[in-house]
Image 1 (tube, rainbow, N blue to C red):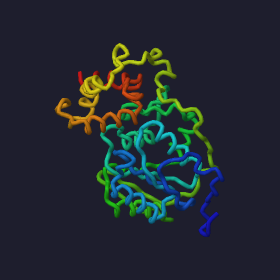
Image 2 (cartoon, rainbow, N blue to C red):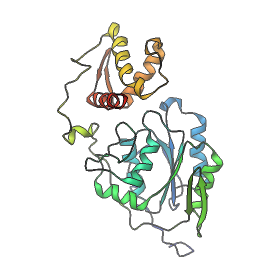
Image 3 (cartoon, rainbow, N blue to C red):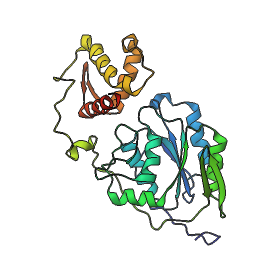
Image 4 (cartoon, helix red, strand yellow):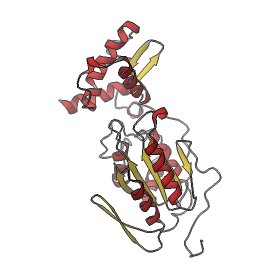
Length: 296
């Protein structure tokens, strides 16, 4: 109990159980802040780092960045349910056009997952949480209220959201069309510790949705240095152009731009790169099929 008689729980020594790109603040705070990361680790804009610092200064329990709609969300969920004092999750920062993690987090809290552990209603390419037991997902959804601040880069709004969650009496807070009545309801029972041990990077295979992959860019299109550009351009043309409308002329990409997008594909496990050989993974093939269907 705190001085006002509100139930608060000391987090376990193992908290937070998962490593990540976040900072730890006040363990007894009722809110964590998730800043969407839509760029490379080495190119993080100062504005995003400032959002994290503002959240910590305002009193959040955890504040950090989220980049992917699967393993990234899984790690975040594990860290939040390990601290039952956290009752709110504010999701802010400009939406990532590739992973759409903001939309995925909001959909997870509001709609949950289906029998294949795919986040219901999420627009992201691969929003699977196969490494989380349903018990952990259920607990997260019961414990956490999501504050949808997606696309918000205003530090004052993020700070206000954090401070409103601290209030003993219900306090009005709104962003765009969303209206909230915020206050600190106290801890949600006891901590639930879950650490990801076995990481499934291609959950649809574990669920039996597709046959075992043959490493492919069609017929195992291993591309040597002189063919690499052609092969990746072909893939980018079929996938990234459909998914990112700004890539109007794939063949006009410079080597730097091509390597940039190739790096993003690798980070999302859509391609594997070994020296000068580039191969599309089964996850990449799956994404291509999804986008082909959406485009058609």
